[in-house]
Length: 460
Image (cartoon, rainbow, N blue to C red; front, side, top):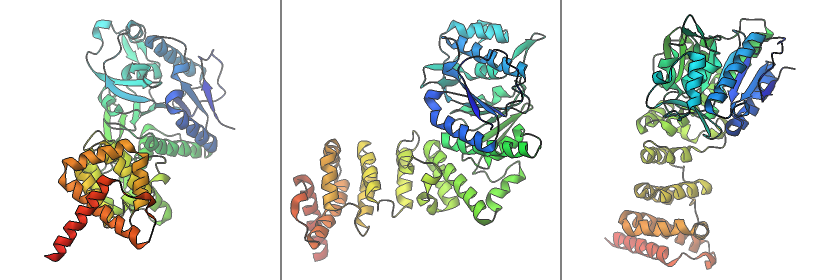
C-alpha cells in the first residue's frame, strides 16, 4: 500500500522503483499533527510520499542543514525518486527578518549558487523557520536546496523546475523572487500569516486528486491544477508562479482569471453547499486573524451574519472565532465589536460569555465590556446567573480586581454592569435561591445604584 516514509538522513543512492507523488519538507517539532494528517491522506489516496524533517538532516549550522537538504534532493532526482510529476510541499513557518550571522550560509551560496558573500541580500528578507525558530533560513536558499540548483554555464539552473507548494506565513513576499528561478510554485498564503488548517484543506484536495488521476492513468497534476484546487478550498490569497508570471486568487475579489471559480458560488446540491460553507468559514478566519476590520465586515456583508454562528469547528477545529479576533494584531477591538454587533445571541452561552469577558477585561477594552453587559442583560434567560457570576469572580481573582478598577474609571461600564447585576439579583430572588452566592460588596453596590436609577426613571 502506498504510504509516507520519514527520512532522518540522506539516502545512499538506492534506486527508486517508481517516482514519488509528493515530497513533504517540514518540521516534526512544529507540524507533527499536520504530518500525521498528510500521511493519512496519502494512504487513503494510495499515493507515494516521503516526509523530510529538516531538524533530522545532518549538520549543525544553517549552511550545513541546507547543504544536506540540497544533497538529498539531488540524490532523489538522480535515483528517479523525484520526477517532473512529483509535487514538493514546504510546510514550515515563515517570517520577515535578517538572516542569521552564519558564515556557513555564505559557503552554501558560494558552493551551490556561486554567489559571493558580498552579493548576498542586505536587510530584511523572507525567512523559513524550523523547530520553533531554532533554525532560520532565507527562503531563496531553501528554494535552491529543494530544486537542487546547480551552476551551468556560470548561471544557476534548477535540477527540479516543477511544482513546489509553499505553506509559510508571508510566503507571498517571495513571489517576485520566485519568478526568476524558472520553477513553478503555488503559495498558500499572501503576505501575512496563514492558518495551517486552511492550507491543509487545499493540500488534502491536491492529494486526493493526484491519487484519482494515478488510478485512472491520467496526466498528473500541474502547478496550475494545484492552484485551481487549492484556491477553491482556501480562504487565503493563493498564488501561482509559472513561467515567470504571477497570478493571485483572492476569495473576495469579484473577477478571477479562471472561469472554474464560478463553481464556488454556482454549484448546486448538498456537496456544493458544503464546499461553499467551508471556504467561507476559512475566509472568515483568515480575515479575522490578519485582515482589516473592513475586510471582516465585507465577509459578513457577503455571506450574511449567519456565517458567524456556523459550525466553525467542523472546518477549523480547536480555534474559536472570538479568540482569533481578540488575538489579532490588526484592528482587534474593531473586529471584536463587529462580532458582538452581528451576533445578538453570541453572549447567550455560558462558556462563551466567560471567554468574552475574560478577553475584554484582560485587554482593558472598556467600550466592548459596556456593550457586552448591555447585550447580556437583553438575553432571556440570562447567560450568567448570580451563582455563575460569583463563581467566576472567585475563580478569577485577578480578573475580578481588574474589572473593579475598570468600573471605577468608567461610569458607562459601572452602569452597564450594574444594570446586568440588578437583573441577575431579581432573577435569583424570583427563583427563591439561597444566598450562598451573594454578590461581593462592590458589585452589590453597583446593582443597588442601577435599581435606584431605574426607580427614578420610572417615577419621571
